[in-house]
Each structure stands twice: as structure tokens, then as C-alpha cells.
Image (cartoon, rainbow, N blue to C red; front, side, top):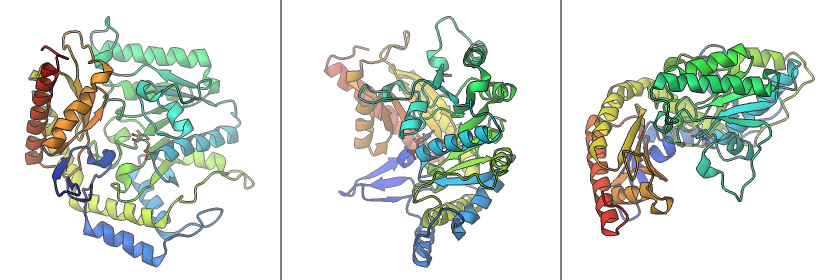
Length: 429
Ligand SMILES: Cc1ncc(COP(=O)(O)O)c(C=O)c1O
């Protein structure tokens, strides 16, 4: 790819595509904004970098921290910057361990997480993640103090569970039993994605997020909302935890939409309670950081990005067009290989199956998601293939006309793929 404008990118041959993936869930305000380029260039000219350690920081990082504290829910008033989402997830655990030790509970070390979740690529973040496809045999994972609860995916719920509310009861009971088995005194935190993104845009059953958060309150377990995808407008709000799911996390991790992908940056936003406990001893110091912690150019990009989001009221568009996007995608359910359409607002996914009755997957070697995304690309549309899925997370500026294009083009791509599969004798539907 060579250049981009708004929701479109063009390759080096000049062919244009509607980027319904939004880069990698991140080009929230859209591409090619002069204002962003100016803000980045201006900061690079003023000062590209300064030591971010010990007692030094820089102006954009301080301003951005204040802004994030203002936007984040409740008493999440402290910010630690990282170079992306994985390092935010990783650093959150450092902060959590320091907090648990500072308050005299060093044995609180274990992590609860979810199957099908994705939290990043560092050793710790990958171990917290629970996407089966990522657990390749060539890699090792931390297994003795990270525990994965069942995925809140209703489409793949156990056969005997028929309603979302009984599924929710089942998941909450399982979580409580797991806490009792490990011992609440040993558990530091629960890492959750409000909507599980890369694991298949799984919107948990109603009340699941609230009830798992309440369990964390009951058992003195920190709740980490991994909002690397859901923050900065994808679900129509700055952060989804409070405004969509009515929960007050102790920690939020974010990245991606923080700069709309114009610069690499992540952040851990954590509570006054945690900070105060850690700050009560002057000799204690946080022995973790990155060269690019609070990089001034990245922070300047984030500040400009947030200013644009506020000025243009971009989230109003998400709240309006998001519902239309959900409705229009549902029309694809009449296609014989589309088993499920799920997601919320600007975070959506098509689930492709070989047999809708039995919900059977295509054999992995068919790589159905990729077959469809290849056809879509020929037609000028980019959707993200993950095995059986085609995922969409477009720029937040997508219009209703754009939605019509995306849905019609995706329909065509799926139909072409079905023909291909029939011709190859792989599928007879
Ligand atoms: C929920 C979630 N957490 C963490 C990450 C890791 O972020 P990064 O790739 O910026 O390290 C991702 C990336 O997709 C993500 O979706």
C-alpha cells in the first residue's frame, strides 16, 4: 500500500480499496489528515525526544496524561505510556504487582483471563491471550499462574445451553468456582476485553461484563479492561467500560485509536487507589519503562487526534451509522455459508461455516476467511480474514453510503467464493 485518504487506501499501482479493517482496528479518524501531519512535524521540530525516566517527562506527555485522566471513567487518573497495546497489557501487570505488594498482598499474583481473548504479542500478553489459533506448538506460554475462563461466545455455547441469560449464569458460576479453587488471596487481576476483538468480535451476553466485574469487587480482584480496540470511539464512546457496559475498571489499557494509528503509542490508565498505595513509600520506584515511554511526537499526535474527535463529533457518526452497519450486515445471513453476524457499532464480524444447521467449520486448509477477503480485495474492499471469520473495524467516519458499498461488495465476494468452492468440489451447498 502506498497512500490513504479517509477510509480509502491505494496500492502502488493506483488501485483503490475501501479499508473496512481500519488498518488494524486503528485508523479511527481516517487517513491522510494534514492536521495530523502538521502536529507530528511541529513536535518533531520542537523536540523529537528527551529522557522519559526518573523525574523527567515532556510537555505533550504531561498534557496527554491530563487529558486521558479527564476522559477516563471515575478515579482512573494516572497514566503510564507504552509503545503499543501489548506493552500496555504487560506494563499493567507490573503496576498491578507493585500495587498488590505495596498493600501487603504480594501473594496476589495469578491472572484470570478469557478463552478467545487477544491481548498482544509479548510473552506475558500472549500468555494472557486465549485465542486457540495463536497457541502454536513452537511457542511457550505462562501456564501456572494464568487461568482462562470459557469464552463468552453464545454461538459456540455448549449444546444444552439455549438462552443468553442461562449462558451468562453458566459463565459467572464458572468464574466464581475458579476464584474459589485458586483462592481469591492468590488472584491479582482479571483481564477482560469488553468485546473480544481478534478472537472473533464476541459480544458477551448482556450483564456478563457487569456480573464478572461485580465478582471481582466481591473477591478483591482488580479488573483490567483491555480497551485497546474498544476505546476512542469504536463503540461510540471514549471508553466502552463505563459508557457501554456500566463498569468501573481499576485499570484500562488502550492504544490504536489513541493516535488513530498515526504514531505508535499505548497507555495504562489506573486508579487513584492504586497510585496512592504505591506512592506511600518514597524509596519505592517503578523499575520498568521503555525508551519510547511518552514519546513526545506520539503524544502530540494523540492530542491532535483527540482534538479532532472532539471537534468533529465523530462518535455521533458511530452511534448513528453503527446501528445501520449492524442491520445491513445482518442481511448477509441469507447466504448459505454465513452462520453468524456479530459485533457492535464499528466492530463487526461475519462468521463463515460449511453447514449452518450444525455450525460446522470449513476444514482449516480451505482458509475460507482468506478466500473471501481475496475476492473482496479484487472488488476494492479490504476485510480482515482470521480463519473462518471476516472482521471489520472501519474508520469512524464511514457513511451510510459506504456501508451500502461494504455490504454489497462483501455479498458479491462471498457469492464468488461459494462458486469457487463448488467448482473445486470443496463444497456442495
Ligand atoms: C485487545 C487488544 N489488546 C492488545 C493488543 C496488542 O496491541 P499491539 O498490537 O499494539 O501491541 C491488541 C492488538 O490487536 C488488542 O486487540
